[in-house]
Amino acid sequence: MSPSAASADVEHLDVLVVGAGISGIGAARYLKTELPAKSFAVLEARAASGGTWDLFRYPGVRSDSDLHTFGYAFKPWRDEQSIADAPRILAYLRETAAENGIDPHIRYHHKVLGASWSTATARWSVEVERTDTGERTVLTCGWLFSAGGYYRYDRGHTPEFAGRERYTGTVVHPQHWPADLDHAGKRVLVIGSGATAVTVVPAMAATAGHVTMLQRTPTYVMPVSRKDPVANALKRLFGPRRGYALTRRKNIAQQRLVWSFCRRHPRAARRIIRWVNTRRLPAGYPVDEHFNPPYDPWDQRLCAVPDGDLFAAIRAGRASVVTDRIETFTETGVRLESGRELAADVVVTATGLDVQAFGGLRLTVDGREVRLADTLAYKGMMLSGVPNFAFAIGYTNSSWTLKIGLLCEHFCRLLAHLDAHGHDVCRPEPADPAMPTRPFLDFGAGYVRRAVDSLPRQGDRMPWLTSMDYRGDVALLRTGSVADPELHCSRAGAAV
Image (cartoon, rainbow, N blue to C red; front, side, top):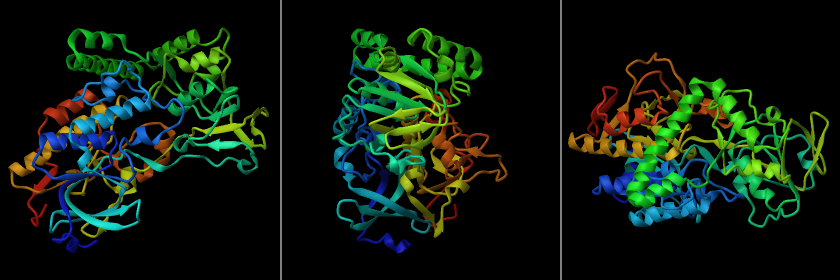
């Protein structure tokens, strides 16, 4: 797309938000509230809002963070469930959009294919495909805000399994759950041990003949209460808004305390988790074989199980765990490297996500394609050398939305700062090109390691260090200045 795309017959908006999930709805609300004079639209490739919470339909799908911190700071979570199922979260998101007048700004079936920045016009030309008709159009905007998370919506990660074509049963990936799948009374094999697997297993075990969770490596699993009695008491005593604020503060501190303890005292944390697991599992259960990972707590995310439902299913004999590797699929199940065979009528490949930054959006700046691996993340929300582009990526060590809110606040403050100083372009550039770098998502999960070479990187100092600490981000993003010597601002057509 050339600069001429920004012609009079092309619709122009101040901000284009990509994605109508929890991040996009949040961004739209902050824009509408903090910068009411700005024009904006939310482009959503699918036919419905809600993002992950509308896409995922597998049994038991739920949050693994409490909704008092996973919810928005500006909208109290009123449900008595703290660890909530997807329908409740989806209702909350859509209620937020309706209450804040966001729905008229959402354009469904609009998939962003690419965006080209022109410094001469200080505009992005954004190529959009209508997913319902195939029609392609162009919009222009002053700012592009990517709110689509970091994984692919069109497919999940499924490894190549030897002999897969021989298997005569049903194979499903949780990301593409068929509405008509009937597993009642059947033998179910769930391959995986992460958050999805520990959700699917107890949910399916309620009606299946038996569910086996097959894992290569154990994961840390901790029971949490589905309902937060303190939160519900605070809401009764102080009302929904004040009670929510107090609960949110409590849970933020609690998350920080747990994470910090695990990182500083990994041996003690491991012993505590093992003790809790042992109390929840049957007497004599091989805890060290199935629930004692070879890595430290929070090297990868801990899996939360509401009211210990996974352990309850194991105690009741409705579910079991096998730690082994698949040698090959057979006609009736899988054969393991140990020689053991597991028969299954249904195989669920809960084997993870495919990471994809910014929904696969192709970016060019003044005709040069942006290679994400060559960029650095600025304050965890912009890219070096890329003007007027922001993105929303949440925390990996606590509730995603805690950081999204701070990023959206800072984004709105940045736009107001530019307006106040007569600027319409800003571009982050590191003062020290030789600064040491490391992966943007500096996290041990397999889905992150598989994609690390295709993602931006981060530096070793602020503002190029991507913080995973809420308290530090409050100082940086909420109360800290938006002006920065490594953020270069100018007017259209001037050197940046």
